[in-house]
Image 1 (cartoon, helix red, strand yellow):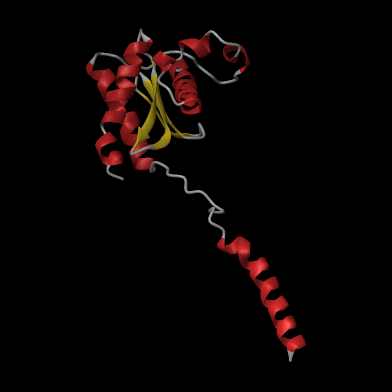
Image 2 (cartoon, helix red, strand yellow; image 1 turned 60 degrees about the vertical axis):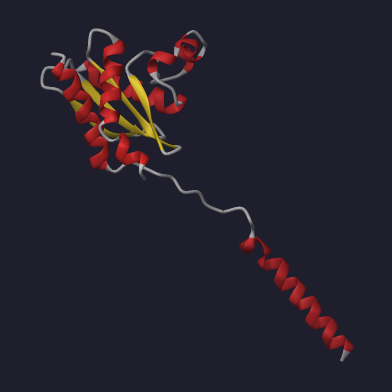
Length: 166
């Protein structure tokens, strides 16, 4: 009888050890919050409308937190080169999590030469709400990057109250 109890105890201990990872306190996956396509389009459209109201034709790109394009719009007369530049601005803001106007130190570092597809210049804002990083929006086509950034911020502001409530 004692041998049976010892075997049973050993078997139960082994089962408990095998099951331990399944009951770990640390999660085995992460949840990543993403913008819907409609939200990304609203941000890009809001940026373009704001620049249009200033008499400017621009392009706007929204990227996710990994820098992958979710939405890109080019206004009717915006220069074609503004498409690529708006993407680079958005990508850079997403990678560094800061506005284009705050990227002075990075622009003066070796990153400016090493980073393919980076644009350390004004004209982008990260999309953050409710303590979550969603991505970034970049705008290009205005004569001054600060104006691009104002339009990018306006596009984000069009959805920010809704994102904060998520």
